[in-house]
Image (cartoon, rainbow, N blue to C red; front, side, top):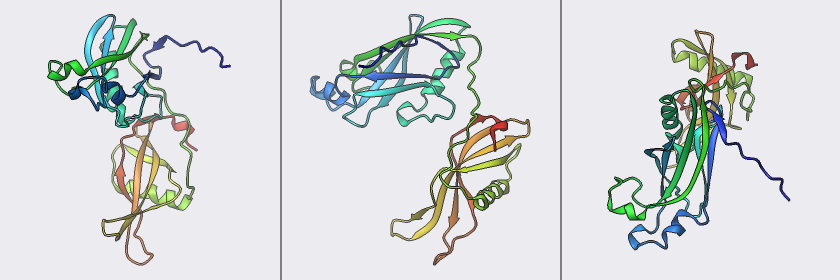
Length: 258
């Protein structure tokens, strides 16, 4: 027997905030009972209500796996969490709505609709396909601007190599970035990956990391950076250089860097 769970219904603006959608059947299965032009659906959209006022469509998306019966809505991410492709731009849209609210408590309701035509206009011929399948509500307490806490724990290193980490720091500094410098590299893959072209010819090897950068104002942030070593024939590879910089930009507690 499972203990009864008391759900939280009041959240601060800075709290991590996620919603779960539970459907009896997948979006595709639900659409099977609709007109032919509505069938084989994987589309959904969210509608937002604040204090009873309809704010319209909040997000359009797809569930590409036709078997899914559950999904997650990620409004305000936990520091260190990454947005998935279903929720791309959702945290930014949510932050924009919250920023425009006055301080105090606000009733929030989100409705989940399935049906083809999500990406069309609301007056399109697909309007008959769209059906409300779930909804949820909570109270949001805004007492100031949304602020995310600083990360205080380094990612777990999948590979530890002090000499390689030093090379990576040197490679970042060689890029000549202004106003910040690398102070810690954490390798988040167990080893280098060999990259080949469509003919199987080796081009380079790559590896991914998380890097702590310290700014000139004394604050730190975490970002993701990949490195490469160009292939030079035989078993030889070139020097370690920066290959790409990812989308992470998370405040990090400088004192937590060891």
